[in-house]
Length: 438
Image (cartoon, rainbow, N blue to C red; front, side):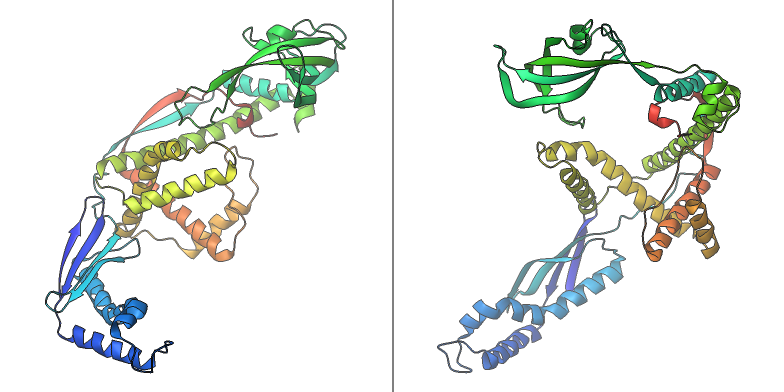
């Protein structure tokens, strides 16, 4: 048996095999004779079925039985002698046999990339250190204050900031209602923004009044930034019948407010608690950014391509998940592929590097460490960044925790070896959902 191995730079591997063995023909003859004796085909006596018909009906099965040991032997030899590690199931292609040339075939698969994990000693990495200033605490207080606003009825005209409860009916340019477009008890908040078309046209309206509102709408706008086409626009006219006008009034920021929203005696206690929570949240986000920076810097220093089959599997999973959650929406497969391809390649390369690093550094996790982490994750915590694992069986949960701990140890080693420069930055503008519930 002779073979050659061809490995492409993306780790797609082909093994070209030639087997010149006189036994192959005799083995085929014996197998056909065996099938001929046992085959029961209408119109032919037992043992008299023509070989051409047997080949047509059973040829693939016969060749699989005869050639199978040669496939297996060739694959085992090539893997052992060349230290190949397939990460996809090997497939047979271009199978040919004749008495002169012998048996030839090709085995194809993607193999695990080969590379050395090096270059992390002294690699420069920026570490962001967030500072939580009073402006951030004030923003958190305002968000909390906004969530606890009281709503009151308004007898007069609608003004900016008011909430207008309306029935909405789309009409055509002649004022005739368009069937199936009526919606009752809709809420429209009049914006502080002068450019908002709803606010422009509903300012000054009173309960019981009606107005036509002209709105220019965009159609089929994707929620992903992957489609560069300008969305179609249309003008829509809505007949608005005002039922109620309400006003949200914010509570005063004082000790009574602090008592209402939590177990606090003073506003100062509330501020201190918010700052502590924001600090933990900032530290958690900074730690995530730092870990990603460590990984990205190491990825840049190790040059190899991600196997195409793994990239394709990643993208397929993303696309399938998107389609299952967005049934009936426009087909965005091409855009999804373009958007997620670089993300897929980055994550796949990091997974290979991390696995190799764990192996080379002989990183282990003990049963005690797994149990401690299990209890830590199960315990309720008042932290901004909560890690919770979904319900699953003990084996799957243990594997998940083990993977988490191994990754933590990888980052710890990289941090110890890296040349870190700290950069202080103010913690960014707060999102209302970003502050932990009190």
